Length: 364
Image (spheres, rainbow, N blue to C red):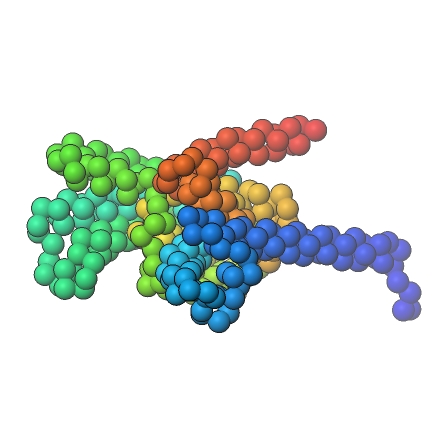
């Protein structure tokens, strides 16, 4: 009695070593995201040193005769955009990780359910209404005019697409594969509606619609950052609370049910909260593709599939990708390029590389 089983100590040591590696990977991701956030604050036409940036952040005041302007640049122009990139990237990465887990589909993402085209349709409808002079008086009184209407309709139609999928799940007990197919069908419907709006729009409205779909952080401020961050915080708390349930669901619905997980409820609530978080981010920033699809795959290779680490890793990877894309879009080409173009251009080939590498590893 009291004797340790052979191999138990070795197994424990391997587990602890694996946990240490995952913790170091998360720390490395956090450090990379922080470094890129500081670089985002450093780059720009107003030349500021890192010491001056930190001084302004911690004291609220710049030094020298132009200190007031330096403070304005950091607090009103650069810092909201940098933090918005972090919040939006984290939201998309977290949504992608949850969706891929509860749907057991590596190609699931925040846009699999048709959210992108639904948001684009709502935003385009808002643009046409506001440019046609039909926006309600209280929108104009709010001081943002058609922008608020665009955000509200983008968010509303994204949630409408989510509601259709949730009702489908509740009414038919659809499998994860069916949910993905339903999302593709919903996406096609809103895509046709978007094409119709673009066909009947005038040149100015069409240009505005297309620019919104490219995705941009330029119009984000502290108020929009607050809305995105609050939604992200609420969803993240819930997802971390349910992280062990998601681990069980990845083993299969029967296994999860045997462990006491209400699979249907967990799937509906998880999809709904992921969609809400994504819809809020997309409604303010426009269509930003591939972050929600790519971030969980990168995080999974760094920290594994355990949601205790994967959810945090996906948020950090998403934030780092968005910050890197923002740096490239703002400073790499001499002109500002919409960030959605950068994420798609970088994310597409990188995701293909991950798929090819994963297939080779599986074959080996």
